[in-house]
Length: 340
Image 1 (cartoon, one colour):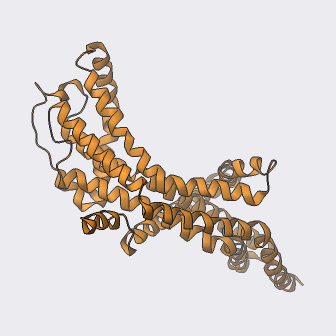
Image 2 (image 1 turned 90 degrees about the vertical axis):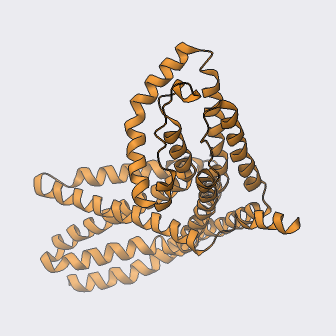
Image 3 (image 1 turned 180 degrees about the vertical axis):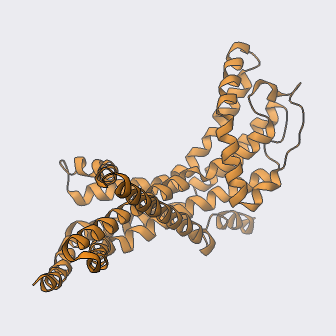
């Protein structure tokens, strides 16, 4: 019995595969945002002025950091940075589990539709309107996840089943149930990767423009190098801790999401046509969620993540700026020598 319990706990432990997934999503988001930013700059430079692109990037970055800036008016910047990074990490770990409560809400909603036909009609109309978005997500998931295709399509007629009161069938709901667990870790990785990518594009392009204005064509490489060094030296001292730990937090969420998604296929969840069967499947999902959230391993990892983020916040507040100033003094001296 103990071996079974240990096996259940062990299934939530992350492996190198889970971390690689986090790194891949983060890097793909960052690279995509960088390419998008550079292309936008080039197009604006060719047909108008590049300043609007910079303004959009600055506004986006300001919006992302506004919560920390505002909170810093009331508490130490270190604690403000720590609090919001901890919230992000907690969302990736615990929020991924809590998000699965959506099944119980959706199944409860479906259960009342036979009694309230007018409500059911409006619900079906709304669901049919948003169905193209769901189909797009299905196509994207089918391209990036080989296991997703194992859900298949039954092609069963909805008439005479609980699904006749929905704007979708059980096949669509099962696909939705497979995709939904990945939502939170994906959003956290994509948002962070996107911000990193567009900021890197901002520094790269503006470095090239400054270098060109100072030294001509030969100065483009110098300008890019100067800004790239500034960009990375502003991130590396604390980011070398902060970024990997956020990736680990997302990997924990991904591990849980992977288990939930494959339970849909392996255990044939939400494959019934009766509301009571669907309620049992939702209860099974809830049971796995509860097991994950109450797992000692989950809380141990979250504790390590939060403590590590505290160290990163301390470095960012009290050490990063000093390191940046020292490195840039040396770099400014080199640039001054080129100008004289």
